[in-house]
Image (tube, rainbow, N blue to C red; front, side, top):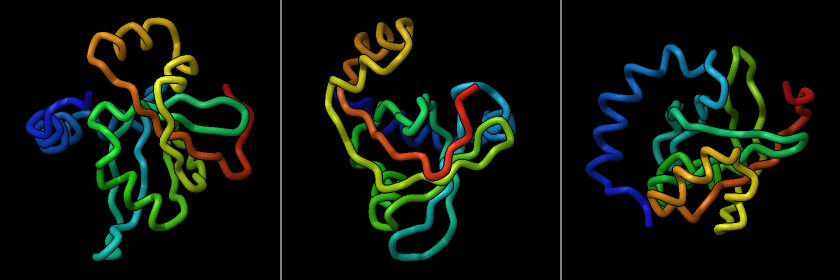
Length: 131
Protein backbone atom coordinates (compact mmCIF):
# COMPACT_ATOMS: atom_id res chain seq x y z
CA UNK A 1 0.00 0.00 0.00
CA UNK A 2 1.60 3.29 -1.06
CA UNK A 3 2.09 6.19 1.30
CA UNK A 4 -0.58 8.96 1.19
CA UNK A 5 -0.51 11.54 -1.63
CA UNK A 6 -0.46 14.39 0.93
CA UNK A 7 2.85 13.05 2.21
CA UNK A 8 4.13 12.89 -1.37
CA UNK A 9 3.27 16.56 -1.88
CA UNK A 10 4.96 17.54 1.40
CA UNK A 11 7.98 15.47 0.41
CA UNK A 12 8.18 17.17 -3.00
CA UNK A 13 7.70 20.72 -1.71
CA UNK A 14 9.71 20.63 1.53
CA UNK A 15 11.93 17.57 1.98
CA UNK A 16 13.20 17.30 -1.59
CA UNK A 17 14.16 20.97 -1.70
CA UNK A 18 16.18 20.57 1.48
CA UNK A 19 17.88 17.31 0.48
CA UNK A 20 18.43 17.89 -3.25
CA UNK A 21 21.84 19.58 -2.80
CA UNK A 22 23.06 16.51 -0.86
CA UNK A 23 21.26 13.88 -2.95
CA UNK A 24 23.91 13.73 -5.64
CA UNK A 25 26.70 12.99 -3.15
CA UNK A 26 25.08 10.77 -0.51
CA UNK A 27 25.05 6.99 -1.00
CA UNK A 28 21.69 5.52 -2.03
CA UNK A 29 20.23 8.93 -2.80
CA UNK A 30 19.92 10.02 -6.38
CA UNK A 31 18.21 12.53 -8.58
CA UNK A 32 16.20 11.06 -11.45
CA UNK A 33 16.35 13.34 -14.47
CA UNK A 34 13.33 12.97 -16.76
CA UNK A 35 11.29 14.88 -19.36
CA UNK A 36 7.63 15.70 -18.92
CA UNK A 37 5.33 13.64 -21.13
CA UNK A 38 3.34 16.66 -22.27
CA UNK A 39 5.46 19.71 -21.47
CA UNK A 40 8.83 18.32 -22.56
CA UNK A 41 10.27 20.17 -19.57
CA UNK A 42 13.18 18.59 -17.68
CA UNK A 43 12.36 17.52 -14.13
CA UNK A 44 14.54 16.26 -11.31
CA UNK A 45 13.10 13.95 -8.67
CA UNK A 46 14.89 12.82 -5.53
CA UNK A 47 14.79 9.03 -4.91
CA UNK A 48 16.47 6.39 -2.80
CA UNK A 49 18.02 3.80 -5.08
CA UNK A 50 20.23 0.75 -5.08
CA UNK A 51 22.15 -0.83 -7.89
CA UNK A 52 23.88 -3.99 -8.94
CA UNK A 53 26.04 -4.67 -11.99
CA UNK A 54 23.32 -3.97 -14.54
CA UNK A 55 20.25 -2.42 -12.92
CA UNK A 56 18.99 0.35 -10.69
CA UNK A 57 16.08 -0.31 -8.34
CA UNK A 58 13.83 2.15 -6.53
CA UNK A 59 11.22 1.23 -3.91
CA UNK A 60 7.96 2.84 -5.01
CA UNK A 61 6.97 4.19 -1.59
CA UNK A 62 4.27 6.37 -3.19
CA UNK A 63 3.09 3.64 -5.57
CA UNK A 64 3.60 3.22 -9.30
CA UNK A 65 1.33 6.13 -10.23
CA UNK A 66 4.10 8.74 -9.91
CA UNK A 67 5.03 11.23 -12.61
CA UNK A 68 8.76 10.47 -12.71
CA UNK A 69 8.04 6.80 -13.47
CA UNK A 70 5.39 7.64 -16.08
CA UNK A 71 7.82 10.08 -17.71
CA UNK A 72 10.64 7.52 -17.82
CA UNK A 73 8.27 4.93 -19.28
CA UNK A 74 7.00 7.33 -21.97
CA UNK A 75 10.56 8.33 -22.93
CA UNK A 76 11.98 4.81 -22.72
CA UNK A 77 14.41 5.86 -19.99
CA UNK A 78 16.22 8.82 -18.48
CA UNK A 79 19.11 9.33 -16.11
CA UNK A 80 19.99 9.27 -12.44
CA UNK A 81 22.70 11.36 -10.78
CA UNK A 82 24.50 9.88 -7.77
CA UNK A 83 27.87 10.68 -6.24
CA UNK A 84 28.42 13.27 -8.94
CA UNK A 85 28.05 10.66 -11.70
CA UNK A 86 25.27 10.47 -14.23
CA UNK A 87 23.96 7.02 -15.13
CA UNK A 88 21.73 6.48 -18.16
CA UNK A 89 18.60 4.47 -17.40
CA UNK A 90 16.68 2.26 -19.79
CA UNK A 91 12.97 1.47 -19.79
CA UNK A 92 11.62 0.97 -16.25
CA UNK A 93 9.77 -2.16 -15.25
CA UNK A 94 7.53 -2.32 -12.18
CA UNK A 95 7.93 -5.52 -10.18
CA UNK A 96 6.22 -6.76 -7.05
CA UNK A 97 7.39 -7.90 -3.62
CA UNK A 98 10.27 -9.93 -5.12
CA UNK A 99 12.07 -6.58 -5.46
CA UNK A 100 12.34 -6.39 -1.68
CA UNK A 101 14.92 -9.21 -1.73
CA UNK A 102 17.27 -6.90 -3.63
CA UNK A 103 17.27 -4.36 -0.79
CA UNK A 104 19.63 -4.30 2.21
CA UNK A 105 18.24 -5.99 5.35
CA UNK A 106 17.46 -2.82 7.32
CA UNK A 107 15.73 -1.30 4.31
CA UNK A 108 13.62 -4.45 3.82
CA UNK A 109 12.39 -4.18 7.42
CA UNK A 110 11.43 -0.53 6.95
CA UNK A 111 9.68 -1.23 3.64
CA UNK A 112 7.77 -4.14 5.24
CA UNK A 113 6.65 -1.87 8.09
CA UNK A 114 5.10 0.67 5.69
CA UNK A 115 3.73 -1.94 3.29
CA UNK A 116 5.79 -1.14 0.18
CA UNK A 117 5.41 -3.94 -2.35
CA UNK A 118 6.24 -2.31 -5.70
CA UNK A 119 9.65 -1.53 -7.13
CA UNK A 120 10.90 0.12 -10.31
CA UNK A 121 13.80 -1.70 -11.95
CA UNK A 122 15.71 0.05 -14.72
CA UNK A 123 18.64 -1.22 -16.76
CA UNK A 124 21.81 0.83 -16.43
CA UNK A 125 23.13 1.74 -19.86
CA UNK A 126 26.96 1.38 -20.01
CA UNK A 127 27.36 1.36 -16.20
CA UNK A 128 30.57 1.73 -14.25
CA UNK A 129 31.21 -1.13 -11.80
CA UNK A 130 29.34 -0.64 -8.48
CA UNK A 131 31.34 1.01 -5.70
